[in-house]
Length: 263
Image 1 (tube, rainbow, N blue to C red):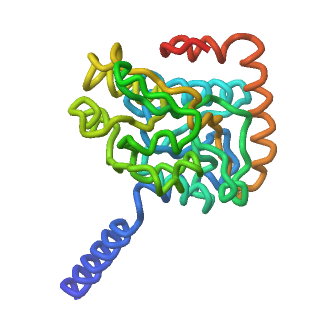
Image 2 (cartoon, rainbow, N blue to C red):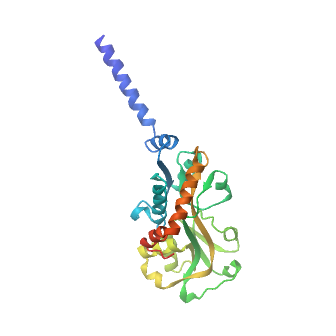
């Protein structure tokens, strides 16, 4: 009998251990808090310095602006830094309140409510100044080789321009290295992202390149709140009111200035 009781106890212990293995430590606590009525707002995103990143001071300017607006509205921001595709998918499903730092598009309009703009991103074609490359339309760039990050879907005309010779790369560092070695003539990238990466990897480039005008894209940065969350409209309303207040009282500009931006 004693052996039987010990065996049952051992089986129960093993069963409980197995159950813990299959419960995701990443999603389950977050999902429970999102569904509960709480002053905690969970947002998901990935690292996109210098706009936002777990490695930046206060998470970067976009994260800091978001945190302050929520604080003023009586909420506390908690972040999950995960791959972008997962962050967006989980937000759409309602596992997070919002996706931090996204652009508007038709697909996201179906599943998200967007905040007031909390930042701005400008995408330029960048070349060595000595090349003196000019353009008025994209076809003017057909003689040149252009490096762009794989997966970028920012400018439809550029994306669909089969007459352009493009080289897809995995990182901004890679595109800058190709420019430096003369393997490409132009780099297609967000201006602040390029400056941030050049400072880190190729600081000598910054005094040698120019940003061709006009920019290929100018995009506002938003918080995308999940339509799956009950009562999210009220949270968005309160958040937007605080963003407007912060822009009026100078806090918004001050946060960006503290990160090296001049708005």
